[in-house]
Image 1 (tube, rainbow, N blue to C red):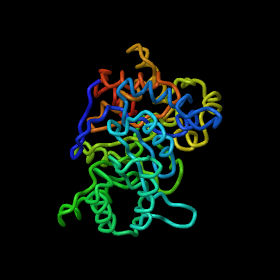
Image 2 (cartoon, rainbow, N blue to C red):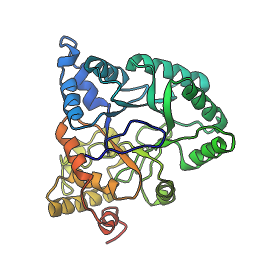
Image 3 (cartoon, rainbow, N blue to C red):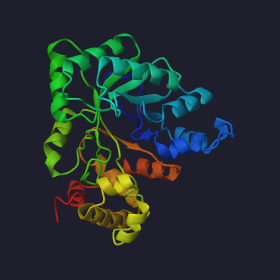
Length: 327
């Protein structure tokens, strides 16, 4: 497996990032009578570590305590790459403020049992907050040694460009990475609300072009569309899809155009003799973007399929066909 570099980081990253969301967390916390290090979640993370998957995505609202427990128990913090996020809104207010960012940062350091975070992201945006406020706050965290590089999840490309323009003109470090939704399935609706952003669909072609031209690292969340390409149902089984997909997947991805994308992925999977999941991940690596898919799952086989997809020889024509831009 070829590891990759991100400018500003000494550590290299694997091509796929482990998402510390519910499939992994549930296996760590489901039974408090079992020692943490003996739980299925630890064994899963051990298998992924042996594959070379030592980069993890979490957030102030999910996955940090579990990841901290694992890395501490296994004494692996120094080799690991931690991506986490701050400033997710709550029912009371938007939280893109220096106070909330710093509060989240210190809570995250405690839960992760570490003194620094490798890649720190704004989880959401609040367009009423000037980019100057965010850039200056993140640069202060960086000077204090509490974070490495930083970036934004769920910010529009326009706001990212504005933030980096301010940083460049005023001698600050700007956003080094972004983390939007990106995958083969077009996100037809915002899954969660709170202003989620995506690079999918024809309406975001200009955003994808900007990412391609600037080669900014894209940490792509929901890259498998919440199980849409898991192989648990086929494109000619809409009733089964209704049963298998969770409420978020049905809201965000269950649409005729994505069922057609699934049908085409099935045909290419047959051609290449691989799972549909590999085609969906291979599509991401065929876009010319500097992409790192974030993948979550309870089975190591899903991650092996993703790693195999790195070398999948999908052509530009096949990628365009998968995305309904041809044929």
